[in-house]
Image 1 (spheres, rainbow, N blue to C red):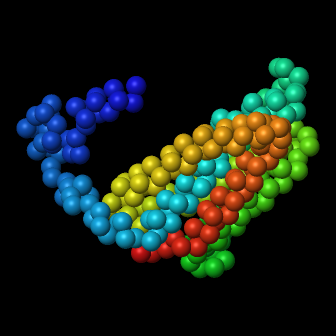
Image 2: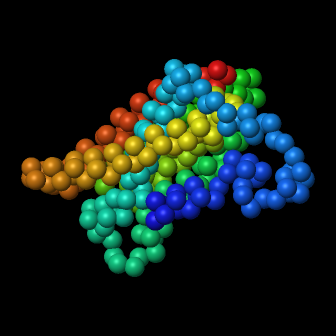
Image 3: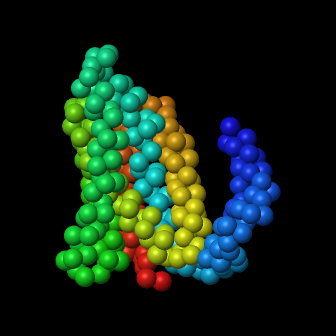
Length: 251
């Protein structure tokens, strides 16, 4: 499906309306020139971007948070069923399994307000974003470490939801940093960061299953395997938190 969409996109999309064969001369005159758009698509400074430390830090940070977050839409429902064996069709269980998503949505909306409040306190928006990113992702690590000690379904799902909330508090700052670092090439920087995030997603799917399977093969059991996974999430969130220290959106 993705390849078919790419083919259709390549055949129909143009950077400017005037370049499209279905746009007639009268429409081109009405639209006029768009020097800003032309400049944004002209001569992407790949070498300069490749040497930008903030972009590397953004990408590594996004690998980390995507790796930790992907559990919520892959293994979490099966883990809850296998570990805690809730009754089928239970509404509380359904809400608990979905909590990281609907609680995370609150985080996405609240992140901008947190940055605004921090900016008023410290007077520097870049510093406010770094402070929020480092604090929230460090607390994510604490949540996943605590998850290895959770003995009830509601306790575990509450910790997973809290981690998702903290994770998503940083989303606005991450994408805003792409705009600040990339300027007129913001789309290229954002796409680079997002593509790096898919590496974290792919790694999460493979590594989580591998760790759990090896623990079961070794006779340690399902719970021990997932505890190892949750510790890996804690470690990767700490790494992502450190990455925020090196993101300088002013450059």
